[in-house]
Image (tube, rainbow, N blue to C red; front, side):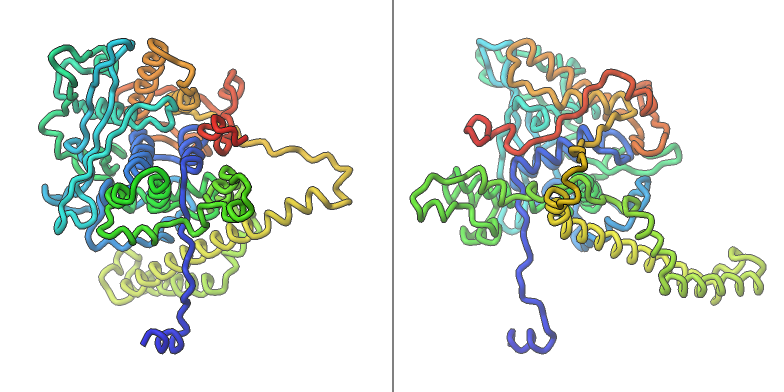
Length: 528
């Protein structure tokens, strides 16, 4: 039966690549997100929420449906998110009715902040539990998975700081005396208690921690109850990954596969099965990296394994090139000009224009023709033209990216070896220097690049307080503009000061360091 269908319909039986993201890949994405991202957001909270979801995905190997709102019949069309050429375009906000039982997403009631005693330290240990209730099959096979997390020295990877910032923005703490992160750090665990739970308000336990931006008469704002939708998360995620320079748009399952790969190296098979949420241990084979995670050549020859090199070869960061076009407007003008010369687009435009002219002749205006046969035909022609333009833009953009990654290696080799270019001084690649116009975004970018490995005691506490405070101020911004045009951004509760890029460049800001593979974790192993 299978063979007959394959032959009859000429079906493609090849297996698509399943990318895997490890800690280095995630570091590059988050580093760009905090320090180099130029794209606009509806509000500052969305920047924090996106980083929070990425970190929780990596630390729990969870499916996206456990963290964001995924409609039962939602069809994910990844190409949908490549159609907007304008940075200011956002996913449409559809109206939907939310009932209490519909909130199958991560809420405050599933997060537990805990203080553990640290008698010799400047403050007690702050840890966190995340109870993932809405995992795959939780209706038929309910099984709780509670993940434990602690503070880390590298601020880019510290998910607890993000939770504190979001909770302060929502005024979520049950204690009326917790108004800032300093109040939490001042609290100590005293006998006979062995721990203290920092509880959230009862009325917020069923409120999603990541919520949807909505449009109001006064502008964009964060909704009080509507959870962040899956398609909105995908839009932000894929826009970010293309801006980083990835060879393909990042998907949530890339991190899930990477976490499974990391746990597989250190945990037992039953524990791996529990983390991944698989009913059968053999299911993990579908998640395994297609590039064998073992230096088989070295094993056969009896040589030490080149683990660092093998790790680089088997993950997405190997292909990253920030020079790749990340949006349609990045394409050369000559390639974009072919859009207006396309015969199919011209034909649809002529059809639309002729229908519009006929409607005006018969009814005086397009508005008067609404509801009539000619009006309906004109509306269908408009929709067909928009769809054709979008499809052509997607095709041109995708083709340009594929051409870039297919030719850049040979072009780079020719640039270095071509005898005619040997006498020409070639400038080394300089990463783009981004100075955000919003002082709140600029301040967070600076703090995210300061590792706390060298800090201890009071200095570490002060640095964390400063970072969470900066995140809270960023989250209060009502609109985060693009770094390309000059736009206004309005705060909800605080005054926002902006400077032009020219003024910022004259100030003494150091350029963002370019992230290096294994810089955080492999140096201690002597990888480089």
